[in-house]
Length: 260
Image (cartoon, rainbow, N blue to C red; front, side):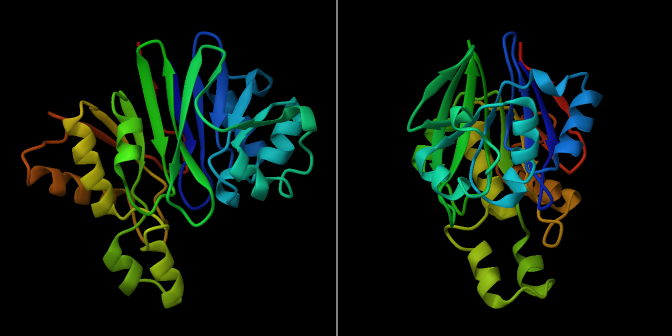
């Protein structure tokens, strides 16, 4: 399995997954031209993408889908509840390519386990498994719960939201207070500290590779998310580089991970 984040953050999110028998995207929140360019850098012909899994309807996750997917006749998979908000945004997608799921399902050699995430619209994270190789991606959630943690257990790599630093959110931006509270609320996003706490529990569950994802460009930075997480873990004796490995996803093509 080859896993590459094409873009992550406020400006757009897209992750490429490749197995022996298929190539897919999780979300496509960058433009079609950006998607094509980034796939070509990886040596992937855009016409080889066989499916796009959609987490939720927000534009930073679906912006490029209508043009990209219609151009290459790609099926779109989303939960029934997510389609309610997607239908008007994906007007170019043919009926035959509007695929719904309401639980775990298989696509080619992938077993896909969606999990509902607490966000201000219907939203889903995904665990994808090919044989004994499992990866997961969870962004756009206001808090963790046992169901989410259970879904992620056994993953070799997890893309995990670390959206904002709480001090920067409340003191460093001119957002209205209502927006700050929405971001910081139980159906908003994960702060660096919340993310670090979840990461610690997942590390005790056996995951060793994490990618901090969906960072806000106004209320966070890669260095701040990384240092906050490492400092949090060190208090309990978990050392980055020895016990876990932590990358940070940005709007650039990320680290290429290969699960064998």
